[in-house]
Image (cartoon, rainbow over all chains, first blue to last red; front, side, top):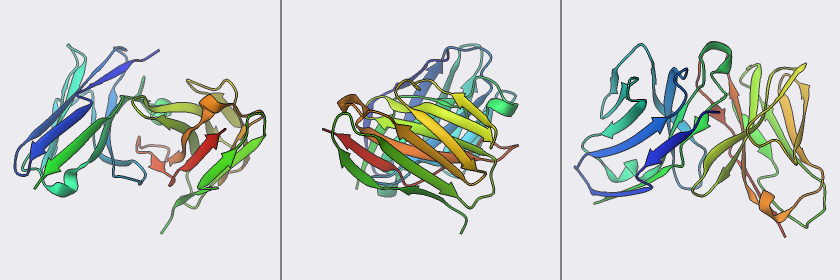
Amino acid sequence: GENVEQHPSTLSVQEGDSAVIKCTYSDSASNYFPWYKQELGKRPQLIIDIRSNVGEKKDQRIAVTLNKTAKHFSLHITETQPEDSAVYFCASSPRGGTSYGKLTFGQGTILTVHP
Amino acid sequence: DADVTQTPRNRITKTGKRIMLECSQTKGHDRMYWYRQDPGLGLRLIYYSFDVKDINKGEISDGYSVSRQAQAKFSLSLESAIPNQTALYFCATSGLNTGELFFGEGSRLTVL
């Protein structure tokens, strides 16, 4: 089955700095890659996703890049703010369509943004 | 607002007891899932259902069973709980043509 590895497990940055979280996946058939943010004591929520026909996607201060050849994708957060502090999970779907919700998650990254 | 609701939110039980976690949703989605979250392991899929008559095992289904009572209700059962089933359990839903999962607030289960 699919295996998703996520690094680093913890990341500490100063407010205003950039943060990068990286994930690798094993199944070359995977073609959907979402990122979820989980604030302390809350439920995970989707913040951005990318499909395999796109190499990069941006939404304000966050962006995701995908390299299908190398089977890795990354989350980039620019101009970090204290409210960005949370656990971030990458995930992949083995195939699109009917398998969208059957996600394989990475282990999570605890991001701390210091004021 | 349409939402995903889980009960109970917290439960402490003893080894060997039967436990049921319930999930209901008002989002009108056909697809429902149960995930388990453990520190350092991310979220792992236990079972999923794409409609009332469809039940499928996920990555870690051993020791669990599910029931899809209606489009809006999906329950997870532990027939005989064991300590390594101590975890945070999330129910989730998704629409047909989108990959986005909508999670419930989670059910924290402790098995002593």
